[in-house]
Image (cartoon, rainbow, N blue to C red; front, side, top):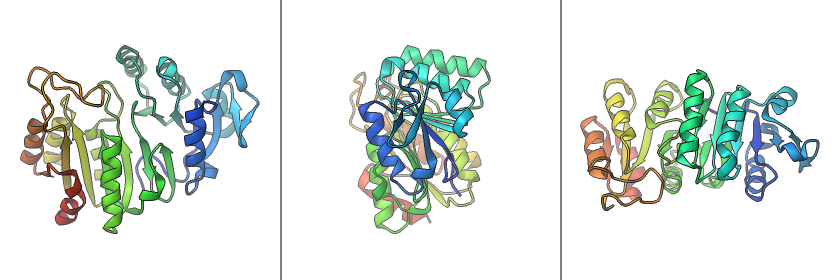
Length: 293
């Protein structure tokens, strides 16, 4: 059991002919059940060709019609990435994972609004995220597969690097992960912490969750409030940016404290008030999680 993806997922890579798309598609294809999962690519100018045996189609809709894909991963450059998201949404895929960093915020505002008005059922993860992995089944994204092990701990994070840190600690402790979801750090994105907590809460193969947030915005506070009233499984948390000065963007486009709101301490206080154990040291995440099992 997993959330979002498993070995039955069928994936199309948008941007498969670029250097980044080729590199990571190859890595994902070679991980676990990747060869049966990664079945198509898209490039209108190279339709009819293939990438190392993966057929390339002119559109996502055509790829879906011919191969049955239900998920997309996007490596399209920033200027065209929002349009790529919308193309996958129009094709009515179940899941779209956008890895691309640097998409203009206005482009994301437009595509999210279009998704809302269309009442789209497509789940968007990202942009500017490492992707999603269900260990020993399938990975869709840029995370290093070798640090993951199948287990019963869910991981959700705004930070790619800290996702790997938490996963590495869990693997070393022999706990493993049910799924790990990098939701990305941009101010306008798809799945939020609270959405992923809901999925883990309903997953019978997840026993506990590590939630990693960052300064900026209020998503972590929303997730904490929901968890307090609804979460049936233990959650531990970490917020990056405890020393960040107000008004300075740190790392992700969304990691900025504005008007005194969105500080790491505010978020930590909200998590603790909701019964979520926290640490200010990311190297303690695995041990903290183990202590609540």
